[in-house]
Image (cartoon, rainbow, N blue to C red):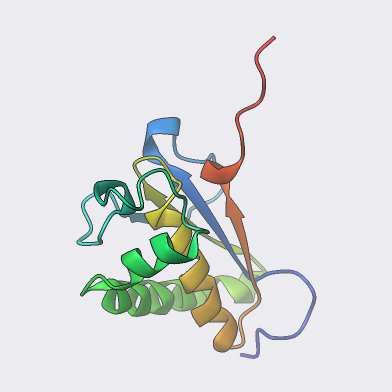
Length: 138
């Protein structure tokens, strides 16, 4: 099946922090929990502390983890398999990628996953909930 046609994303990736709650989803989603994944955390490295996953050095730190590419390949394969089943019903696949705060590892993995799926010809969108500043309280 050719998923590269049409303008709407076939796979929606959302990154978030478990400390802030899992995004509500009206249908099922592939949940990727990175809290205990063997990924290097920029927050544990003094020179990278406080940076988010859009920072080039922080992203590089996460991507240098030994199991990053295995995790990405497996997740991309799972998302594509869900898409193969869901596309027949015209359903969009949601992939929720979470770490503790949703600002570093989840962002890096979410963006890398989108790149892999896009390279496979699958339209993908990414929304980073953890990078959105909280609404001011009144």
